[in-house]
Amino acid sequence: MEFDLIHRYFKTPFGGLAQANPDTVLFGIGDDCATLRLAHDFHLFTSTDTLVEGVHFFSDDPPRVTGWKALASNLSDLAASGASPLGFTLNLSLPEIDENWLAGFSAGLLDIATRFNCPLVGGDTTSAGSNPLKTLSITVFGQAPASHLGFNRAHAKIGEEVWLSGTPGLARLGLLLEYQRRGRLEQLCKGNELPQVQALLAAMPAQLRQIAVSQLGMPVPRIELGLQLRGLASACLDLSDGLSGDLAHISSASEVSAILFQSSLESMWRKLWPEIDQQANAAGLLKILLEQTLAGGDDFELCWTAHPNRHDAIQSLKAGLHRVGVIEPGSGIWLQSQGVSRERVSSCSFNHFAEIQN
Ligand code: ADP
Ligand code: MG
Image: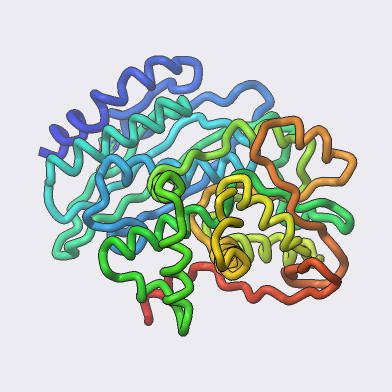
């Protein structure tokens, strides 16, 4: 049964992708170990992520979306290291054999694996026993020339610029919309935040809602950007837990402070949501939007620092890259508003264990 299932949903549909990469996948699914070949003088990069039903994805999420997101979050780690994908393994712990779910999950996984040419090379499939929830774990493998050592979080230097790809905070809006659709919005809002968040969601144009929900469910890992940033970025990471919390990893490892410019973050949002200025309470909406951007989570955009003399080279890489801050002496994350005033941003990134205990 287990072999049947592995064949039907994994070995057979993913076979073509492994065969299309004969130089890297020497042996894939079916043997005790997969064998991958690195290019000459390349280093191996690896990262792993676990998704638990009810914590990282909803039980009623379309399985195709869950399949996409499971690999997207891992590929995003390779992107943040400037590595290109070689392949991945998949561990599934399932309470029951739900063929509909497996078919959708496998299809979503194959979509993203094909798009990023990342073959499935092995895994493990086990029963969850009496645990009623699915757990998915993916380990991804990538490579980069030995001359590229990754982007160390401790490498941000004073005077460097802070950059973002895309529009971090979008996935958070998607999550708020999904909770609202399920009548559970208050679970995500603290204190008196709820009416403000409701006003923000109500003001969102329909197209932006769609973009936000898709950023949450089907984020596109920035693999290509990560490769382009080799030699340009110093510190880099992907935003999985929120801008303020993730950037704090860079500031503390590098023993510096990161100053974010309110005006830059606002203009980043105006590019995506130009109509926001026509709202009667535009200033209030932008304020909540920035709070969501800082707390964020699940965006899988890249955040990096780079010397100002790299500014033009970075700006010309592609559209949608934003310089939003600067590295200074000191510690912590600060939000600089129009004048000279600055406020310290509390690190409020998503903490799974805090969520569980609450
Ligand atoms: P073993 O007992 O030797 O670990 P298994 O019987 O668990 O092997 O799995 C048989 C083959 O199927 C192995 O090559 C394994 O990597 C692969 N496999 C098992 N589960 C999955 C999965 N969910 N996705 C991809 N490959 C899998
Ligand atoms: Mg096994």
